[in-house]
Image 1 (cartoon, protein in one colour):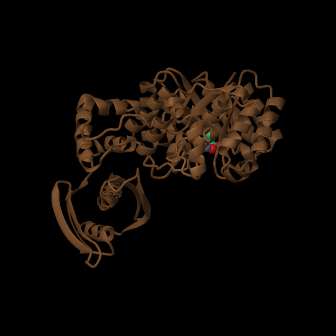
Image 2: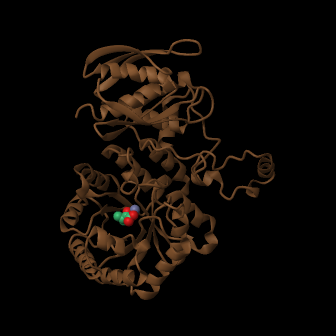
Image 3: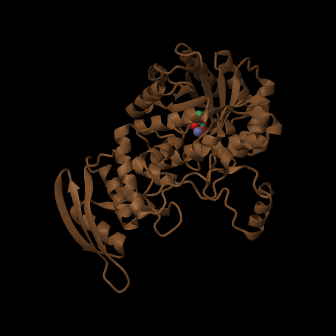
Length: 496
Ligand code: KIV
Ligand code: ZN
């Protein structure tokens, strides 16, 4: 079996999604889940980009033992110095430096020449090698870079000491056969010494997984992926798809270190902490990925599950027989569920989450993994504005009216408003208290599960002063969830 190294960039490329930014504690939680999952390399951030990213790389380096911790830089000395500093506590460390190599990037981004770009690339790798032994080089927009020139760049950085060469299809432009041919061209025309090639594919045309697999078949030995395929625009290659494709086709001779039974819980954790819903039909981790609804399929599956299922859901950690939590479940059962989801809580935190769990269990018959992660996420947020009460009158043949009480920095305010439906009335009431030019740009309500007692998740994007702020909440009452999401967004700019 050929070993394929899994490089997870959920915390760097994935975290660039607007509205999905994580705090350091959440990033540590995800990094520890990735360690449990068995990823080989965790790209923890881009340290020079912000103090928050710098600090996260430091804290993740301390919290994680086995995977290599990687930090991104541009081909700029200052970036490399800052990355090296952020990595100082990592047991195994890597600097990921690089520059655009396509003619688009060379001309329009750098106003430079092909020769100068090679010089800058070599300088960056040489400089990074002063700090760490493991240096990965990325040739940004390699997908649209001429193969002959790309081979010259790759040869130059290998000679300068790069250990891994990343060939990103930055714009998600390539066809699988072209991307595979690119990797093969490099394998055939570069003396890679002991360096390996990495795939890094984007999903703009929906071909990220196909391109990655094509890269592997043609000689790449590292795959760069994110959980749930999250990432800028249409996203990155998803870890679960590549890993399960290689596992399902063992005869092709590729193997990873991923413990696939942790895939589902890691997916739920990332979705929940980033407030980023997973589309129901998403391969491997979507709600419907293993649901058979047509009569013909159900009949076939009942006779022999392999008729229509190529993966056993248990292999990715989906266990329909898992104990369901209800109002009668104890603290230990809750803790057990949390641990299975990769969440470790101190005793006091567990007490608080357990209280919230009991309140929710009073409203909802059975509590699932998403509900539990939502409760953990709600714990410990400090906000300047909180809701004291919300009362709404709505229905058919009545005028919709909402009254709200807000606590703003310890002071109580009240307002009432009428509007077009309960949410509109409640938001108008909020605006009667917080008199700023705020406009809702996006408003999404999504049920987690089934049933009329389900929790509704609300995502809201609010525009204020030309900037966009994201708010999220989840509640069995969707009007309350909507107002909470609105207040969550407002809390992000109200101090400014
Ligand atoms: O897509 C890309 O080119 C990247 C690089 C910075 C590695 O994310
Ligand atoms: Zn990328």
